[in-house]
Image 1 (cartoon, rainbow, N blue to C red):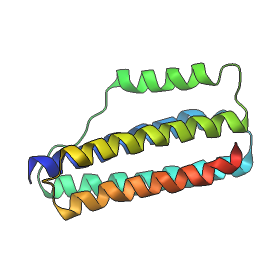
Image 2 (image 1 turned 135 degrees about the horizontal axis):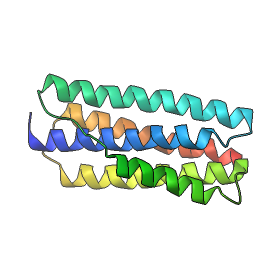
Image 3 (image 1 turned 180 degrees about the horizontal axis):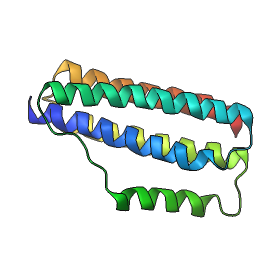
Length: 143
């Protein structure tokens, strides 16, 4: 497996891992049942995309992304601080939209820096970008 393929797939793993942890953390604060269901669906789809990246890395005998406890702690702490005084449905949707926007930016940066990756890796990266763009559109109704 080429280095660019590994790096793109690891970035997919990283972004989906952060999204899944964010949803787990923020779901505790969701009072709106429709938003709770939306986030649950999103978590499932992030897991599917993450598994695709992991499977491709494993089939190429490449090591995947391993998040740190510090990154997870910082993510959870950031969510706790940002919802301390306002955990309304609108605020939670706003935070999820911001997270998805950062994820899209990170994926495009990775795509642009690893243009020698193959179609399979790019396909997974673009699937994540497309999913996050659609997710933002769906979450806007909760603002």
